Length: 432
Ligand code: TYD
Ligand code: MG
Image (cartoon, rainbow, N blue to C red):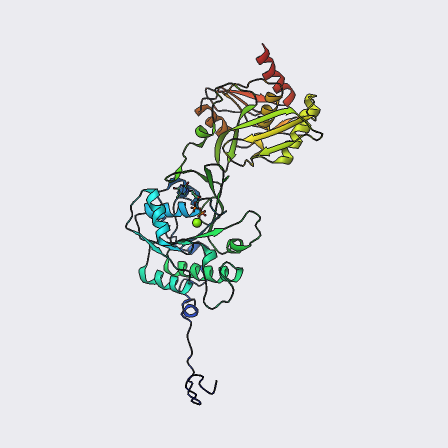
């Protein structure tokens, strides 16, 4: 501009270049260790993990948070991510910077009141500008940084709106670099919506060290924490929590809670032993088989694969000679847990037959076995672990595929090879 628009003077403008503080902070300074080293000569530094004091979380991340590591916690809105991390922040005996772009400090204070843990080490910082956040981390040198959430972060030099792919990628990149430089561990929250239509945090998964997923049925109180990726530990561990009035409670013995014991001796209930990661879990499978009122029978299933249910129904129909095609079939896995383990098959078949013929399966029977198309019962993994868990919970009879088990326990282990012979056996005992 040549002429000033307010005073009318000519050539009175001077150029001033505004340096972006973010750009300079992101410049990577190579350290001396960034040279090729012979693998066998690399000095092993002991990883001084920071325990979070939330045992279930520690277990999932591999025994505590590794300094300088970046953890991405994903999950649907409302599942409890902010609650979990606020609990981490207030329980940790270290300085925590909780950056919140989602909620005001007052809102977080109210939540902290519900959790009922006073903390003088947790600093709430309501900010979304990444330059300010980085400055604050450098100034206050916290022991842990929590960012809620990556979708709210804003890079001042990028025009795109917060939550867009470019904003998420650039802002997270800066945080990850800072974590590595300062050895400050960070936990980033990322929302994932049901349809997965917003790519959002997905693009971050290869950049961070650990990817945790918090999941569960919104109508139910149980939440499962899984790790999808972990550079410092196994991804097989899971953590189970229960959402209560005063925050998330760790569930150390999930099997005990998932089993109702079926005190009224109702038909249509069978106990399954399934593996969730490396953890054996006892859950109740419920089935209801009733005569279809209208043309096409309904098949509704909760917590289990619907296509697999159709397959099991076809196997029952063909191999046991039972007419089931005119029936409505509803199957529900109690506790709101989604089971991937195919060892649940045998319990599903048991529950369906139990409901169909209206006979009660004793509550101290337990099933573990995959059912094949010819009606054979196929082997499942970790049978010893499953038997051990069952006998711990007072199971008296466990139906498993034909396997050699060396495990000595109070519970009687019954080897099953086919569904027809197995259920004839159970059925016969009932009618005697
Ligand atoms: P929140 O942590 O806000 O979920 P996210 O950050 O994943 O979006 O928690 C969501 C729900 O948890 C909320 O709807 C209410 C419930 N809740 C409780 O039941 N008890 C509690 O003590 C708290 C803090 C939340
Ligand atoms: Mg939240």
